[in-house]
Length: 105
Image (cartoon, rainbow, N blue to C red; front, side, top):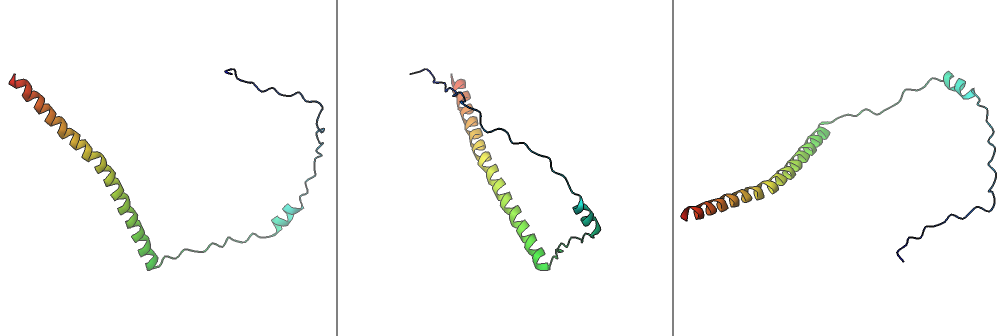
């Protein structure tokens, strides 16, 4: 029950298909001479034109992203700082209680 069962590989009964013979092909260089004779056209990329509306939208979007990221980072900072401050206050109170109890005796 607790012994692992190791699978055994069955022995092959016969050989499979023989490997196919690959014959080398000849390379013709007619395409290179045709391509060299034709002039290559310059790539036509559309130019980006910034209108005042798109500049205003980009500035507004960037401002919104900065404000959202700032709010998230400040909230994360406060999520760590507030419990840290409360633990520090509790430590000071406990320390003062323990030292005042020791002075009374």
